[in-house]
Image 1 (cartoon, rainbow, N blue to C red):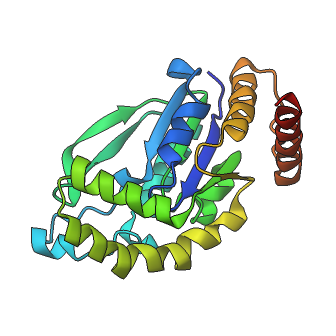
Image 2: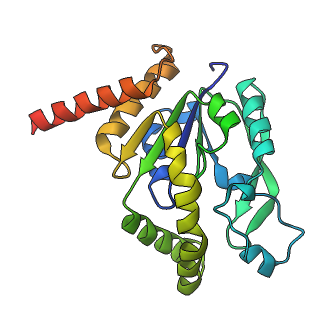
Length: 231
């Protein structure tokens, strides 16, 4: 594998399609990619009871253990394995077990605030922000939290209005300025195909790490024009 790894950050609001973009742009990389969910780095709140953990603002930057994440990314970039924490959304706390993560050619950090921390941004080779309409995002959030995470509908809506929406406006949306490329409409197929090609070139050793916002946006615009011409 290549040392240091090629690190991608994928940020965006809740329900924007970050995980989908992460999966699509790396689908052909097999074992050459490691995905790190930012959610796994929520602070350990074992000292709080369940009711207290329910009231924590999990969309605020202070909810995350940034120092541990920095240490783990630095270790992976140096070719060392790390013991990544795991998070249980039903109990609002970390699980007891950890998972061993080995360094790979490509590392993807994905989460609402993946582009928030300056030091972590400096470790990244490519920063993406997934932008999706707010109405679509809240509907996805409700479906995920109620069906997949076993939460009640009223609680999900209350949380969205009290913390998710204001934190998005205060912290998540402003982090978009750090992105090398903004992917509109969730998993935009043209953008995904462009990134997929470039990541494959990285893994194959056929690319130079010269990812700049202007050049990426220009290349994306050219591909869109070609697609329109083809239609």
